[in-house]
Image (tube, rainbow, N blue to C red):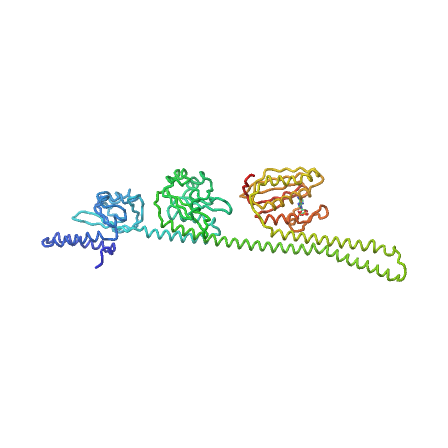
Length: 591
Ligand code: ADP
């Protein structure tokens, strides 16, 4: 025979009914000789109820608990003597609790059942106030003519736990597959986790490059008020290593659970939490190999005891998100390398084109004047040969010796010099790509002020006014950034309009995490058709007017590109030019 503990709910109900019917028959029939049998049946019934895996609670028709078996005691975390005699509502959370009296009354009046004889999934309430999902089936019974109900309960907590985990995992995989960055996926992930777990607010915190903090990136919340309020008002959008919940997750590399943030000494945003009725917080790291890149933080308005299994699950989820980030980073790096390679190819093509074009003209000159030199030598030889044995007069040789030959030689020399200067330009340009960079925060007001001093003499000579406005600090290589602004300042001076007083202005502002600088002049300006070309190697607009190689802006652009910088120009011929330089913002420590 089967152990009672293995019996299903239906078997138990059937068995109870049969015993009940048998007892009734025997009571109304011959009682003689059946007393021993009844005792045995009652004992058997008691053993079934005691050993059942399912919780069994019986109540009277007012909802008062008459009996509770050990399984139900375990499920509700109560002892029988605490609840027997009390209304069954103590084991129910709202809304079931408030509706229960009405429900029994309606059933008794109309026979309209929602659970009795049907069974469905409802929420139960443990003695500590926490709720859990359960399957409840209620049977109606008549014992000695008295109506009572037996509730059969199966705890679905574990079932629901697995279900929730699967839901979160599936949704995470789907959201990540549809996103190109973790920031893209963030809002979807926060929403999924919050909604599935029934938490009210989720935040993503991210570490950025060399930055020393962990910064708030994204929030999802059940309501607009919940999204804005608790937010960042008290602590700002950034925590240091080990500080606040995101900073502690970063430090420990592990998930953290705070059952009640309003009484937790480590939780910084207490006031906001209190204002919003928030109690429990949990946070877990998003790790790439052993490094914590980001943290996700969630808040609940209930006081929830630590769920170690959930923490472990979320830690694993964090690793899954970490792998996604790593893959995306690799893809982004690959795309960046490809773009850089394509850019280099284009640059190389330009260089080859310019080299063949610019080197060609001095070569053509050298070729032409070599022929002339040859001709002059030939004429000279003929003149000498024709007068063999005679004295050759100086006048005869003069045109070749004093004009043709020196002229040809001087052009050849100029061509050679030109080729030399072009080749040394190429060399300098190509070496630029190899120079080691030391990127650091730069205090730009001092740097530009010192630069202005180095051109003070030229400014005075040309009667030019230089205005240096307030400028933000940036991140860059000091030597190369000096070179960049020195080139721009030189050009502003070189290409001034002699017909009016020269004014050069240097100013700056911050925009979306970048420092932008502007070197402005009221010089000759550049026509729109040439504004892009001036950055090409050796490109000059007025090659004969002012000295130069056409290399300064190409070098400037290359130097900036290597340190995540950009340069562009706005200009109007006859009015002046504005050269803009954008670099990553950096906070320099004042010396
Ligand atoms: P270089 O000054 O040696 O010619 P650059 O590469 O610095 O070489 O500049 C390329 C060309 O861009 C210059 O020859 C000039 O025609 C034009 N240019 C540069 N800066 C200015 C400026 N501030 N105003 C007008 N034209 C300019």
